Image 1 (cartoon, rainbow, N blue to C red):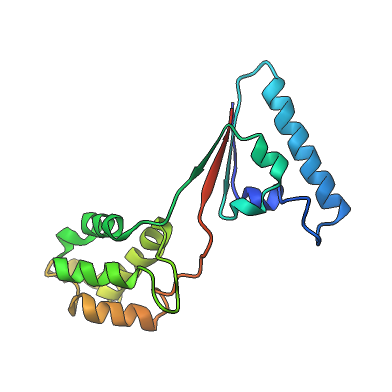
Image 2 (cartoon, rainbow, N blue to C red):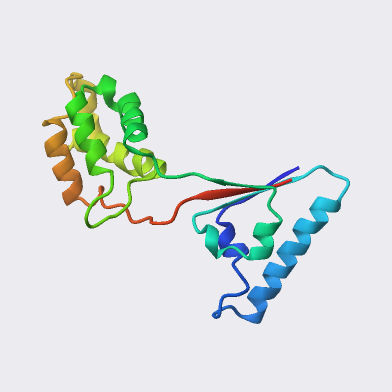
Amino acid sequence: MILLVDEADALAQSREADQMHHEDRAGVNAFIRGIDRLASGDLPAAVLMCTNRLNALDPAVRRRAADILVFDRPDEVQRLELLHRRLGDAGFSKADLQALVAATGEQVKRPYGFTYSDLTQRLLPAIVLDAYPSGAHQAVSCDRTGPRDGADSAVQRLHRKGVLNASVVALPASFVFA
């Protein structure tokens, strides 16, 4: 059996937090007892916990982890690879991709780069929508010459629209309980 707990920090928040109510502490206690029962049961089980706030998890939950996997934000090389894979055949030049890599990295107002999720779920759809500002129905009649004005102006438009202003600060992490 595999049990996946997404947003685990909401379920197993540290009981050491001052603002925690008795009911919340009791919920964390029950969760820990449940993990212990799974571990000592006859059925092979793995509990996978995902969180963006690793330090918010209760220390007793962290101690029970067989392994803790931390997934860092992609660096410049990884962002370039991802963007090249998705946009290289769409007419974006190496300079266009480098401009997007720079815009999605650390900035003065944002001291961290984009996550993979930021790139694939926010940036790439915004680039597609930006390429067809009057609607996707025009995509059928467009030739594949690339973005309408190149990456520099696309980057500027995406900044104005707020797409390049990532708001997620925490690093995602996953736990594996075996």
